[in-house]
Amino acid sequence: MSQQGNFAGGFLLGSVVGGLVGGVVGVLVASRLSQQDELEQENALRLDKQGKGSKKGQLKASTEQNIEVARRGLEDKIAQLNDAIDDVRQQLSSVNGTPPEEGLERSSFRE
Image (tube, rainbow, N blue to C red; front, top):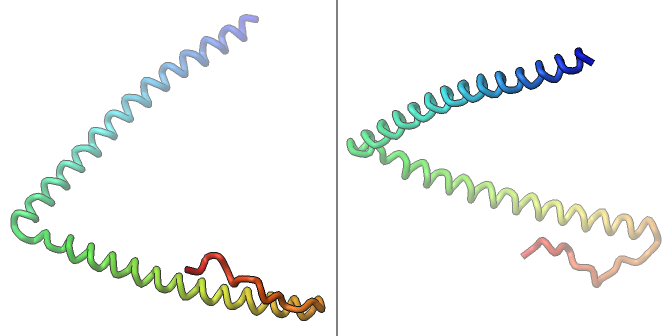
């Protein structure tokens, strides 16, 4: 029975000490990260004041263009997949001997 008491006491002490050490490490890491963030913000402000911060606008425009290109590519892929689904549906209906249903819509995903 005394071993259980020692285990419980040791477990409790280890939990408390581990929590304290983890808390101290967390505070130190957080303070360093916040210092780095402050330095980055100060550097960004300096660049904006010097007029060299105009790259942000260019990056934003190129990012929007990339998003548009990706959207168009996805729409093309979706159209290809819908065509492939229709082809397979027609092949399966001819294999099963059932006439293709004319009332089926292609896909509800299309606009």
